[in-house]
Image (cartoon, rainbow, N blue to C red; front, side):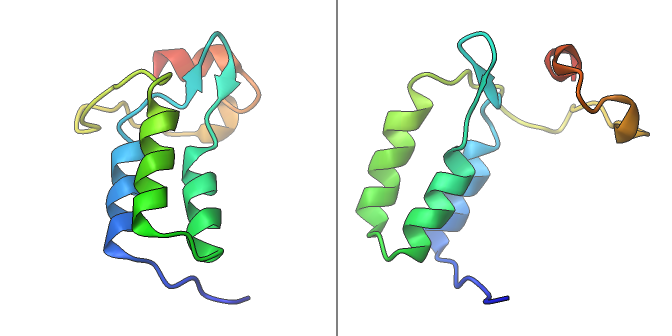
Length: 88
């Protein structure tokens, strides 16, 4: 498998993307991290990555720092249960 060369911009945007809730509009899941990674792999400019980030985060809920995120001991008990995502 080919290794992806990352950029500081991509790394920073992926970190910032993690500060948003992954579910929006009542159950849709954001694909922002995958979109940014794919665009970067296709040669998109840093400006384009930032533009896509701004457009995509407009509809997402900022959750902020993950410092107080609940740790899940057994992820298998939560798979397939969308309601659990809201409690985490």
